[in-house]
Amino acid sequence: MAQTLTPRQQHLGTLASLEAQGDIQRLTPAIDKALETGLTVNEIKEVFSHLYAYTGFPRALNALGVLNSVIQERQKAGKRTPEGTAWQRPSMWDNAADALKQGTTTQTRLTGHPFNYDFCPQADYYLKAHLFGDIFAGTTLTPADRELVTVAALSALKGVQPQLEAHKAGAVNMGNSSETVEALCQYLSQQGLSQSDCAADANAGAWPKGTPNTGYAQYFIGNSHVAPIQPANLTAGETTSLPLVNVTFEPRCRNNWHIHHGARQVLICVSGRGWYQEWGKEAVELYPGMVIDIPEGVKHWHGAQHDSWFQHLTAHIATSGPQSNEWLEAVDDTYYDKLTK
View (cartoon, helix red, strand yellow):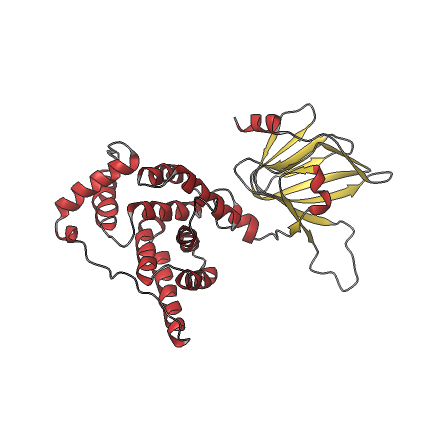
């Protein structure tokens, strides 16, 4: 990833993702770090101004307000804050016909073909004349930069997958390599910034991610994390009679086929998308809110889908006899990949 994604591109993606999520708390240090390591004030202004078309004015203005506050704090601390190349008002703004013409050309390049949204002519005009005309006319960011910023912002939003996929292709058409675009998406996931694969929920959501599941790593393909959940009403020294653990699976991570002896297992899905399968049955897609009750002695496996983080709570309810896990063969890639086709 380091060969295809520069530190500057990492900062652009981070700021765009946090702006899109409205995460003011994390945006403040992220802006400070970006200014400290290469981005300029005017570049960051352009990032947030550009994104209003995708995330709305409220979040764009909030982000610009955070930037202003960071600049003031850096000035008080005597830190150098690079302004960068001064913003210039595009001459295109004085001629609506020019904006529409240039925007149509830019949109055609981005999509790879002429695009006319005849279903809603007013939206078609806004896209051509304003978004791809007025906004793209700014020279502070390159068209390639703008599409990386857009991909990062859309990755941070839920329910916009069609637009995300379109702009990933558009980012390549505007001058980025496909490796760079994929590296950006991977970086955002690793940083817990992406919502397209539920990384934001899994890394900074309501349920703790916990620590690497090293004790059982030999029985998993991919990386998982575990976080014991303690009831809030326990006093010091007390233990719960029903231990509850949150298990976080990274994309493609799953455990081996296994059998629980002396207990049944209950899975409560809390974020992301996963799979559960019993031996001899079809795999079941898992989503937040689903509950799986696994009888004692049933051979099964569970884990994340290929393009999503996944979390479930798990509890074991004693039945009879000693409790143990019987770990069996792995769910190999050939078998697992068939579930995604």
